[in-house]
Length: 169
Image 1 (tube, rainbow, N blue to C red):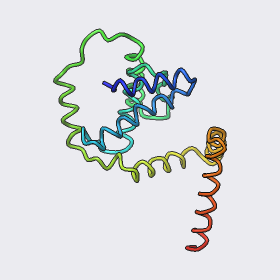
Image 2 (cartoon, rainbow, N blue to C red):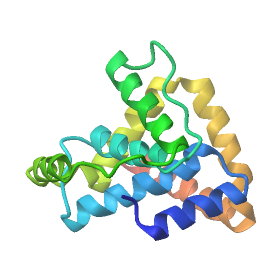
Image 3 (tube, helix red, strand yellow):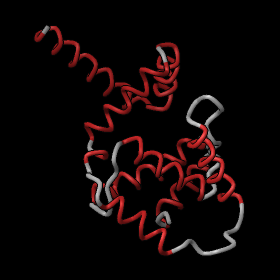
Image 4 (cartoon, rainbow, N blue to C red):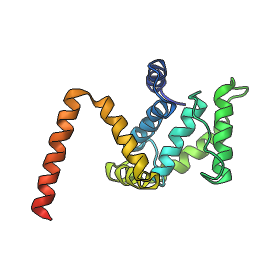
C-alpha cells in the first residue's frame, strides 16, 4: 500500500494537469526510497520501477498498460490487471500469506538497483531506445519547464562540461 504522502503528491500532480507518467513517478520514487532504506530490495532497477508503476496503476493513476508488442504478453496482462484493480473498489482484503511471501522474497534482494549509478544507467539505456528525434523533443520540452534561473544553471553546467572534455580529450 502506498504511503499517504505519495498519494497526496500524485493527486496534486493530477490537479495541476500533469501527465500520468509524472503522477506515477511519485510511486516509483517511493519504491526507490524503500529500497534505499532497506525495507526491501530489488533484483534490478527495471523491477523496482515496475513495482512503482504497478502501485500507481492500482492507486488509480490513469496509466495505461503497455501497447501490444512493446513488452511480453505476461507483463502486459499484469499491467491490465493493475489498471482494472485501480478502477474498482477492493472486494476482498489481500492475502496476508501472499503479501508476506512477496515481502520476504524482496527482502533477500540487494539495494544496488536503487543506487544513483544504476538509475542513471537505466535512464541512459531507456533514452537510447527512444531514438535521437524523441530525445531532442524531450529536451526541448524540459527547457520550457526550467524557468530563467534553471536555464542559466544548465548553460553554465554545459559550458563547464565542454571545457572539461576539451582538457581531458
